[in-house]
Image (cartoon, rainbow, N blue to C red; front, top):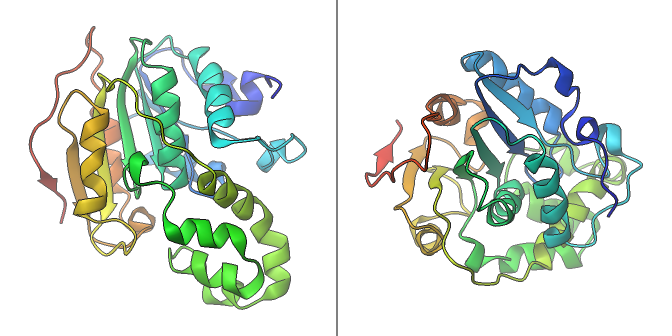
Length: 263
């Protein structure tokens, strides 16, 4: 994959100040990265929300699609490493969380990486799920029914086959990337891990989250919010509080060992 400019990956970076901290955000499968900019008004101005624009979507719609999730992680990590002069977090939701994990592995020696915030995602060693594998194999209404179980899509879209042809190609690409993902063990990461999930998410539970702990030296912080897979649509505070507290002192932050529950 060729290396697009940083403007291609992150939008108009000239608007971002050169002080403070950054949160590089990876959207869910088929998600619009630009929508994540809505969180900027909820955080302190010193914390910059930076969506990562993947090939094949938004202003990069004509860029070639990645061959694999690992190849995509290579490219994203390279792009972020060029903007790693300030302390930063990696955030990803669902598909984006798995991608962010692989990016974090590639940036493990970058001292300004402080935290991985993984939302709505079972542990990487549990990926791909049987449901995702099935979704990658089917089309039409059967595909719509599977992705509809995650929420986030209005019933009128799920029922309209014309809209499927218009809206689902990028989503199907991301589903295929996850379905072909092959987890490989590696030394645990030394950054902090925060897991944020909705209480009513049918695709994530305590058991499926547990193996995340094997991937990090420090004990993960687990946060539960009311809501389903897209809990943050109505309750962004569940994430904003995590973004706000990015620590900027030198060196690796200490681990968080308590279980936090958001009500």
